[in-house]
Image (tube, rainbow, N blue to C red; front, side, top):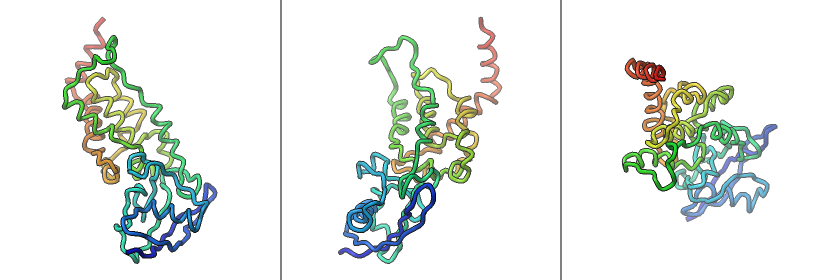
Length: 250
């Protein structure tokens, strides 16, 4: 059985905008992205929204639904009651381009700052040998679809725009952790994680983990282990002595 839902959608651009109200038919089994597409087809053809796969795997349709960062294509209308007003707004942490489309180029700039995978010298393709436990540990982080919901909900970025130059955010902490935990990677990213990417600014509230559509344990499996590695590197007396001795070798 269908019904008419009340939608409130943010319309505007970088110069400003406002929420606009719509009444739109909803059919059984639909998701919020279906309703946005119906609005485009029937009432507001100039409504801008970014989407691609409609299967929760491309991360394109990120937005805020009733104030919660979500994927439009993975939020079922059955989540809401028939008399509930559904409010759809753009990601708050990033500049608005138009309507529900935001400029997420900040994230791609941060991605370019992370040193790439650095295998041992002379190790050729097909010569990699890893234990299954090491594969599974880093494979979790590779499930990321770059929806940037974690970036958007992180209050260090969301509430303090001036932190962006010094803080990469949870999506890139899992990238650093993936490389740092890879048994064949020879680069040391612990100092960079702390000094260049802002790992110390994270106070592990786990809000990033809560919104991840892939269920990645960002805080427990990436950020906290990276913090522990940084602390070991800087403050463990045995590690400190070992680093000193290695530096003295001719």
